[in-house]
Length: 177
Image 1 (cartoon, rainbow, N blue to C red):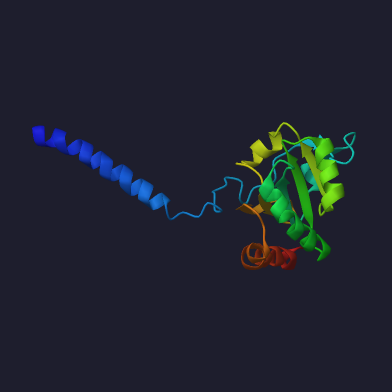
Image 2: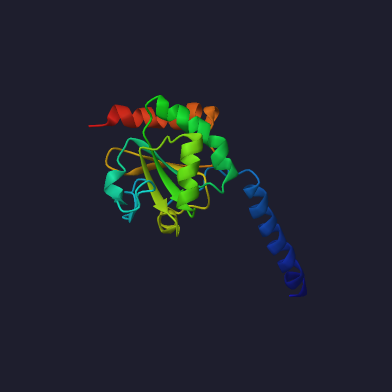
């Protein structure tokens, strides 16, 4: 009995160590999302450019990227030029301005250009919470019916676009009814 009591802490330690060791090899850009293959959550929030106009999930149709961004996010600034390039190339991008000051966000888009076809102001973060956002930037790939098909956490750069998002976006374009 004493041996069992002495081995119990060792067994617990080894179990925790194996669990933590496995975590070292997980990709932080691949955070699971319960919303994959489900529609965008229902919402009614102001348009960033015209706060009198309300936007709903019905206006965010794809195939499109839904990019969660904020002016306080340095990584968002790093990816913004790439988003402008994608928009110029014809990629449909919708924005969700997450927990941000709308005046600062409008100035940002004036200074750094606006790649978004629709831009939702989410000052309280309610849409972000419903999307399961951990922080900005996060990007969702939606199909023509507004169904979430993929989630990417982090900045989109040329490599991410080329290797991960462009093939998925192209497949959605080809399957569009």
